[in-house]
Image (cartoon, one colour):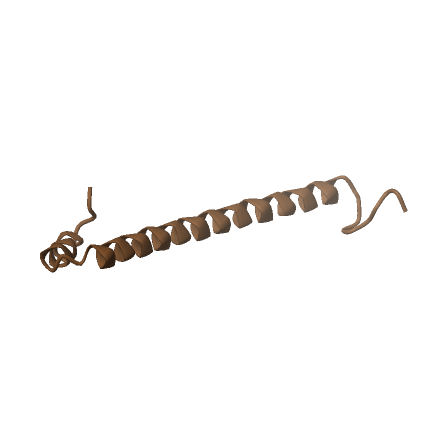
Length: 73
């Protein structure tokens, strides 16, 4: 269940009976992992949106509409 390399750290905390520090370490590890995952997802969403906008611009160019024009004006 623990990631590789985490077992010696956990054992050191348990041997010293410092459970509060172990809980804080585990909370910080999980929070950091969630932050990394969130940033990866945000970057992927940004890439998908950028691809959508580029495809929309290409569609407008093929349809003969100038870039940035509006039909309601």
